[in-house]
Image (tube, rainbow, N blue to C red; front, side, top):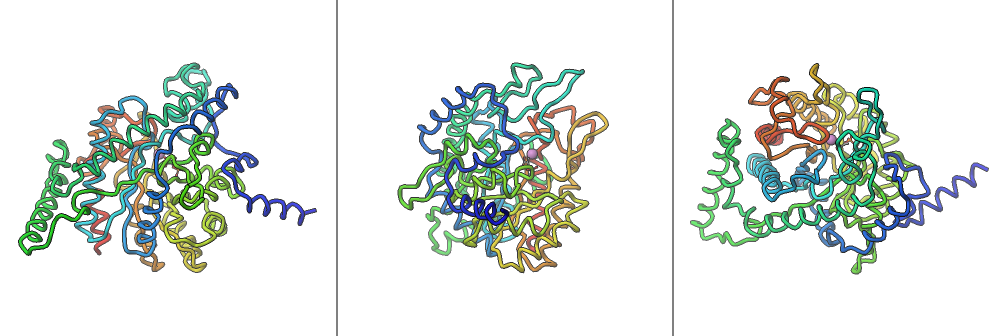
Length: 457
Ligand code: PEP
Ligand code: CO
């Protein structure tokens, strides 16, 4: 009996289709009230153009392969949850500015190429620890991201609405369009390096430190020109910027999964990179089944309960051909647990010879609620997790790969600490996130300087 069922599992593993996840338990999926409208939306989405081109995701794969080999560092950054409201050119531009600033600091101060990936243009769905929320004895479905429902606490807002999947697609398309325009059309030109420093950041010590980096870049460009070295290279005038999000709502991801006409392979064309969250990484679950068959670079979050066996099984399933850059394991242990929880995983992966790219998400293991009821993170906890993550890699002889952070370009007050020493009281001033607390522009830059110092050490 048991050998029959094992064979059955193996056979279905072998024959992957974009819909084969449907035979497996799918955690964290919305309760759609109306199957007919969901089906309609799925067919609408399936008829829309892909958001990214498979060739771009292969380019990212190559760059992540470089990072996997220790020759580059990855900066993956953006909102916890993007919003359908307020998607303005300014907000997209300001997010991009901070990411470009962080990347310049990392590349210039640490001297390593930096692969830039946004949590952007698709980060609209959230896993939740509880499927309902109770306020004043009223129980309603939890907010699951704008791809699913609205954050207002009313029955109408919290009911999952499949039309939101189409809206998420269009919102992603317009965000991506602007990102492409900014990154290829001159805004990301290294000669613009001063322009990325927004006023509120420029006024801070980190902003002034950034100005010195920017002056150094100006001087380097002038020096190159004086030596007769051409500064026409596209690398100086454009950046490769990639999109990513948690591939959570599988009806959406499946509908955007397309067969590449050049290679015949399947790609989830909703983003360049997609990742599996800590709550949906069950080996026999729907998310792992879906992700193993698409050829995009993949991420998988790992919390403190992940065992070495779990991780090796994920490596075998998600990257059986051992392609460098294919799989990024994103450790999100918490500052107090990372020193104990991460080393056994690093050793197991290293000893098995799996080409894993490691990233540190120092945000999700360090969230707590203030006495005033605000969800926050302390900047020093974030930095402590990064420090211990680097130490664990040094001791294991592995490359610390990259960081994965929740940030915004705005001057918000959501995380406490940092050079401005934001306090619990400050959280009342500009707390705007739709989900988890993000580092503001100044805190993000400070983090980049400190990571660069650690990389250089
Ligand atoms: C996230 O990245 O926003 C998230 C929900 O993370 P995790 O899956 O690690 O909890
Ligand atoms: Co989050």
